[in-house]
Length: 230
Image (cartoon, rainbow, N blue to C red; front, top):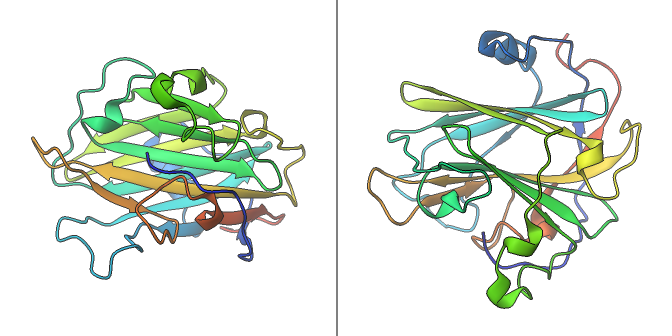
C-alpha cells in the first residue's frame, strides 16, 4: 500500500458482461464459467524492464445479480504467507492478492486483501487523501468487516487461484441495478520469494509509479448486457 492521489479518469470503460450460473465451490466450474470473459493481465508499467522475479498473472471478470465476479490466476514459484488473523497487515510479510474498487463519481473506495491461506483484510477509505492524512493511526480507522463480499483462494503446484464477488452494496456510492454503471477497479499483487523481505509488485493498472492508490490510473469497467462467453 502506497501514496494516494486524487481520483479521476479519462479512459474509455472496458465492457464487463454477465456470466452464466456456475458452482462457486467447484474450481473447475469457476474456471469454465470465466472462459472468454473480459481479461486484465498484471504488469509493472512503472518499470522500463520487468523485475527478473516477475511472474505472470491475470484476472478475468464478469457480473451477475448486481455483483462483480472475478477469477485470478497467479504463477508463483514460492507461495508463502504467515497470515493468521482477519484484518492483520499480512501484506508486509507474504503473498497477497488485492482488489481496489470505487464507483465513478464517488471519492470513497474499498481495498480488500486475500492471502493464499484465505485470510482477509478489508479496508474502506473516504477519499484518496485519507490514508496519507491518517498519521500515527495508520490503517485502524479504515478496517471494516464485509461478509457480503466473497474472497477465496486455492493453492496448486506452482500457482494459486482467487475467486471473488464484490456486491454493489460493498462499494461506496454504487447504485443498483449495476447494468450500465461504471466502476473503477485495480487488481494488484505482492509476490514474496521464500524468506524474502522485498516483494515483487504488479498491477492491472497502468501505474506510472509503484503506488496502488493512484486511483486516476485504475481501469474503468462498465457492466453491459449480453452473455460474453456463450
